[in-house]
Length: 375
Ligand code: SF4
Image 1: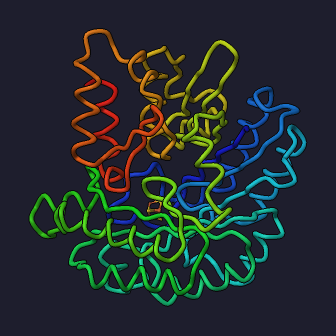
Image 2 (image 1 turned 90 degrees about the horizontal axis):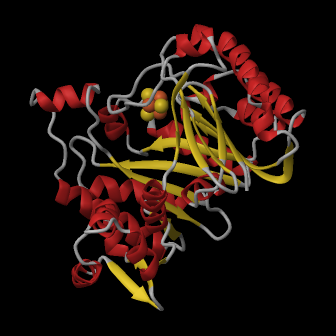
């Protein structure tokens, strides 16, 4: 399976908690798409004649740009590669950008899955997160999108300033009532140099503590799984047949080619796996769309092992105990003791020699992976 990712780095304003690579100057949009076309021509040999199974427009806010730019780029790809008739083509969108006309334009352009940055259905909480839309926008947009798209995903966030379990329950109840077929649940994390980080550092804002966040995460898991959603990845829940194919393929370490500033690519050939990333600079990208590279590396055996453990755990893909034993660095403390400790905590299960995270272990996925890799 081969996927494409496009990073569209524009937002009207930066949300309080966000540290993604983006700019708030939207006057560069036209120039950006000229650069994107040039980068696509330069990378054509990576995808020429191949079948593309998933395309993901991420950002930033892809719903901010005129739809003609999106359809123009998809036409360019169709001239180079073969977009599978059943390919998943997802666009990340914010509620304030979507009205009926825009939704229909997006569908006509070939987008068949929308990932909507709802974050909350509660006005107070949206303000605390610095979001530009209202609770009413959230509900209206999800309803209108579901009438027009077979697959709709929403992002929900817990752990905002002043949020308690009651408010979080309200978000979950509205999500369950609207019932989009895919829900991503994120815990608010404090990223360095964001406005939120500075406000917390100065004591102006106090966020819910780790235990409260963990309780909200568990509450989401209980409500969504009881509502028929499958918890298929640490942060992701889907109704049958609605998991994100693009995300799942990257967690399964299948190849993808990224376009746009900061976009990553992962290429696999018979004898090597390579990761590379475009530069984190819009001006650098506009000046040299094909050459502004941040890093490029061929993965060694140790990196492949680390990635396999880390990513397989997130999607509950069983890891053979023998694979772990053979892959750990010589001299790592005993694997059996590590597995015993994790079993005792209830964070993993082992069936037929396969190690899988339990539901309670999901919350500690990174810690479990580090223990299995290094001991
Ligand atoms: S809309 Fe999304 S990408 Fe843009 S600033 Fe907010 S969180 Fe970040």
